Image (cartoon, rainbow, N blue to C red; front, side):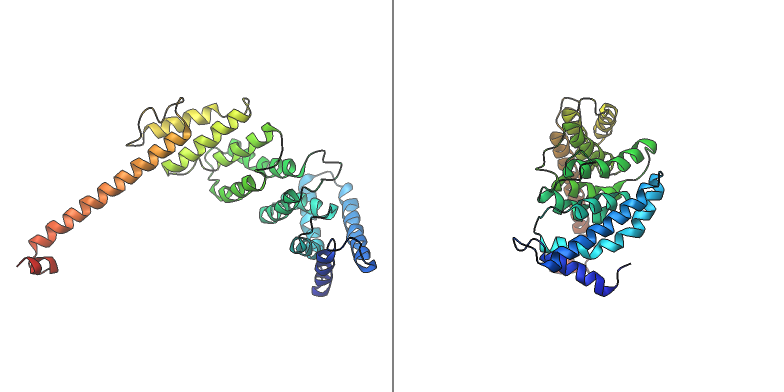
Length: 280
């Protein structure tokens, strides 16, 4: 664990790094120190085979890099840095989704290269590694409420929107974003999930979402006010969502009108009310 002074030094050095074409001796030394810390950590991890055990050690080691992470993101230089790209992956492995997205936004926006052993772009790594546990949960426990992942996956979708990656990987993101919505009781959210599942199938015909699409279509057909052609396999998800929203709006308006009518009838029957006094 870093002392406050060490955290401050790391943060200042990381923030200054990249602000000028040439590094000062102090800045170069600071970067060499943080790289040395990373190499020691990687050496410790190399002798461990269990991914679960590695994740626990990464949780223990990550605080040693917090100052460097904060300073790099604050400085926003976009300079290539193996420490930052590695910490992005470690955050995913540790289950720290917020930190992974924070680092991922920086890494993807500046198009930083991943270390050679990954063999994939940063956007691809970020997408695959964040979606994998969600997809596993969705398959192993179909009744699980995964709504807590809606916001993180939507943020991920925004981060990688303009990035080049295999269609199959982007399909995984669409599939995961759809799965986390399926436990909702809101028909409008079902429409969003349907759209995402269809996008996944468009990107990858082997995405394995036909059953989910059929299930959502059956659910939407049961929603009062949704036209039959809107909730069919030939209809678009946007049409279904629009129809559901419109139906919900009509029910709300109808309910309000009935309530208002009932209130006026009650007021007429009670001379003691303000409305009754105005009529007398």
